[in-house]
Length: 490
Ligand SMILES: [Zn+2]
Image (cartoon, rainbow, N blue to C red; front, side, top):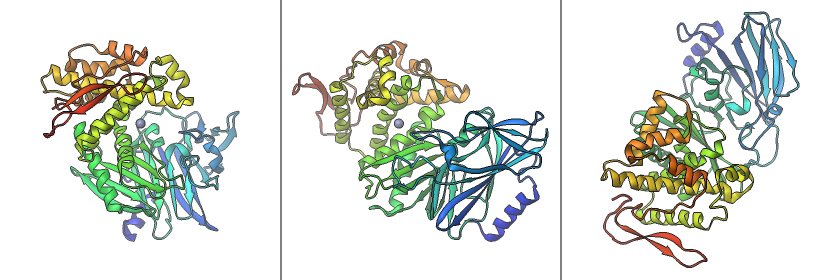
């Protein structure tokens, strides 16, 4: 927390209207004031932006995200503050029209409330959470904003007023500051995380870059153990992509009232939000959740916007992420080679006995959201293809390259030319390392649903691939042959 003097000087900068960063006119500003009244927390929010020459702009209220909709029902008392400004309703409850004197600044205010009283579970925790002693909100579920181009970089100012005593705060953009100027597009803002209240804050460094953990609730593990685990996994992931370009990273942990063993997480702008049910241990499930979800910071977030329809790319964004989840845990020393083999075998079994194994892409997209087996399919066959490609690259390059190199090349391409992440882009990044065009693989195994078999050398020279013939059909399984130190690929 900053000292009181710092706080006041920062605040007065805002009150005087002096720009904290010279020559950076603010495109969009929010002022947040937490208010606790009768044990109920609400967030008073003021919104400011320079008006255009038309004197008219459309305003969007938060609407839907994840498994939730009608976020605008959490928005109360939306009204103009600037002189001559009017709000008009439209046919859509999430869209308003703002009219104002041309070229004049526009200022509006609203109150954010939590509009449910049930237990905190996955049926509601992606909505704005505003409890008496803490809050967690995500841009997309609570920010009212002018409708502008989503990807355009903006100068955004975020101001926090009169925090209740003893509260801590953290957000996607850096260690807490009462006034912060950030360069962010609307889409990055929608995916940003804001937490405050009785969170305990812990800091870790990864090669000089700060990682902050905001945790609340009581756990079978210590806060330090959690922070160490998260930092250890993140370090391996950043090494994998040779990318430490994260000046700041926030991980929040909140205690839900879900069934034991129910855990979830979501990757956000420079952040990761974790939702854990009581009694969650620092074991495989949580390690996998952290590794998998934090990998999404690259695949797909840094690789590009997923081509539409998204489900047609899940073999890569989810399947390759699952392949690397295992890799990351093994490289972090959190999974032994034996456990690694077991995990691959489990995934092979799930794939070979899947009732929808041979589904083509059209059927996958049609049934994805209402068929549990279908939801697993892109994870299973995607991770198997990653395993095969990695083995092929290692073989062709005599161990000089691996799938990691192709992923780093994909990242470099996305940096050079940001855009849509589609199968062609993936194939283009893989080709120089594998020495052939892989679009045919993708078309056959991912799009047409031709069954994919694992390569015998996929787990390296210390394993053999055998058919297990217990059920109605043979299932390929890896078995370890040597007890010497081994890892996939050698
Ligand atoms: Zn995922």
